[in-house]
Length: 521
Image (cartoon, rainbow, N blue to C red; front, side):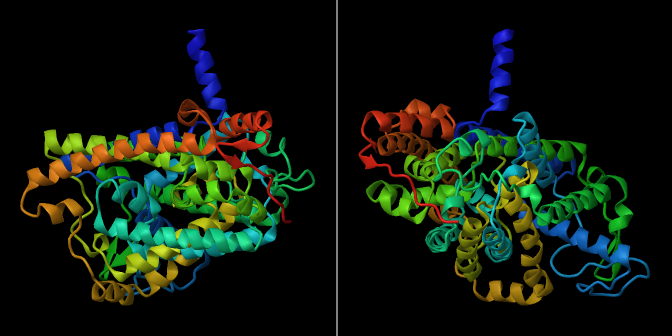
């Protein structure tokens, strides 16, 4: 019993490996899909397996903020359309007020990790230029989600394992945007802040190249913007939860000229749905917050690993922290992402073969390939680098108290407005630029055979499993760390192991000279 208690105590207080973070998020995906499965069955509808999506829910929650703000201050609704009803805010554009339980759960998950580790990241200091870039990054990323039909969670963590054609194309252009952002922002002195996670023991106890965010005389909470942006985030969550559980009439809206009450989530979809999707968000984000895992660093790692191994000194001079260069060369973000793919897709393949409940992501323009996937993909990649995090990583960082993410989240609220204020024009643009109507690769291969489609998806699962094992071995070769360390140890622990080997081997690890980066203020 004592051993179990010590195990729980240790792993609640320390960071986890990317591998186990990926496994944890895969489990969260299964819980979420089971929640949707139960909800569909209880409603008498055909069930399908759709992994976690958050961008539409985010738009609904932002819309709820707007409606509440207008009602509080008796202001006109600038998204108003249709016939207004006296005393009731109306809904216009793409979204109606609503609540996304996975989003709420992810923010809670980040908060819980900060409490478990007894370390809110409110101490992390970011200079004004990083905050400005993060704010505009939120705008760029948010608008990109609307053009691309989803965020990096939708495409990279859900669409790729499900063989969605539009996700493969979106991710390709995300890689372009991410690489461009990484290089350009490095040139303006932001590279020292490109880090997956901040822990005080590692950052503040290390050399200058690792310690850009640790200032003895400054911290995040010393900036008034911290408290303003925190109030914004709390208002965002509070309005949605209050309207979703206690007072749905506070978010009444018009739809096609008819007054509709904001339904309580439990009334409309059942308590199973609310509880399971909320728990999925919490569990998934605990894994993210315990490792710093995100989608944007996985893409950058996939692109930059070989370049950083061949020319590590260039990236050191650019100011990229030593731990970030190790992270990229080791493929740790890809290892976490692929571990998640293997767990999630394994469940989907099993359910489709044995229960005939197939994958979702079909049936609308949103899941087809348009010019929006190209443009939006670039914006997603660029915005994620500017934010130092993708959308799901942002929810985790909100809960942990990161200043730059609190500021960037306000940019999210602005970035979705061009789409919702010009909803009809955007729909017309996406419809007119349709390039590929088929939703999934296996549908192209076997358009008339469901059995053939199941076989292709099962084989794809095998490819992903092989890819995971390959990445672990490749990461070990690139860094000199053991495969056991890459699978089971946190990034800080891996870095400390490599540093120790470097001292013993004259600063050369895995054939790479490992210099300390230059630091810009």
